[in-house]
Length: 338
Image (tube, rainbow, N blue to C red; front, side, top):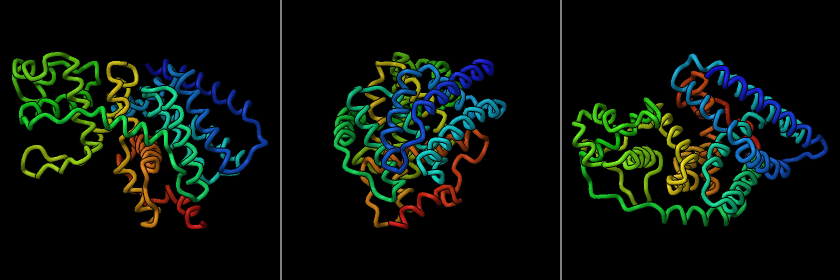
């Protein structure tokens, strides 16, 4: 596995070098960042899809076992070096690390395929919005992203009546995915995790696909409360706990499954277009109350913070580092200048 990661990272390094040769050094300014970033993300996720998945697998390996952190660090160093060079050429050196995090978060989401033209247009709007942030301005209107978001909302099935047993099984399925990956999700493993009999689990969720969707739904609802959904009362046994490393691992595993399996397209759409409200609120606290976080702003914040958290966790650091530790200083300074 380590040798495969090393080979994939070396191949990615060659891709980065080819992109830098093609970019040249003539163009400068924040306005140039958005189109370039969108083109690079799209090329990476489409023409280098195998390498993009290898990168994700390396991150998950490092999150699970710190012995893989060194291999993951080589990937991190590659992307930091690449985006530092890109941002240096554009005259945006101070936001290179932040841009690398946005690239990581946005490329993770762009691996999730739904409707190709709309996905590509929404990616452009997200990257242009990040370029606006770098310029100290909010994002422009994002009609493609907002249309996709409305359509993704329509794919959400109504929640079934509360069922304590089914909920316990779904939570156990999510925990099993976090611990063992999607390939380790079996009825027997979930029964052991939930402390239930195999017969009860098989009765509630008859097929492996049903079990996977239950796990997906459990993790997704922890990440993104549904519109109109009231928080579950504490003490009910159904309260939404604080997100942790297991949620991050489960999300990474299920995102990879949704990116690979056409049968999970509806979940891919939800993950891609409906996340970000919590990240948006956190970022608004950084940028100030005068900034109104639109759906595309929330998506930018999700990409930025998602890339940041993955970098910290895969690097063996805290899962949720203090957001006022100076990481966002260059961005805040740019907004303060406007």
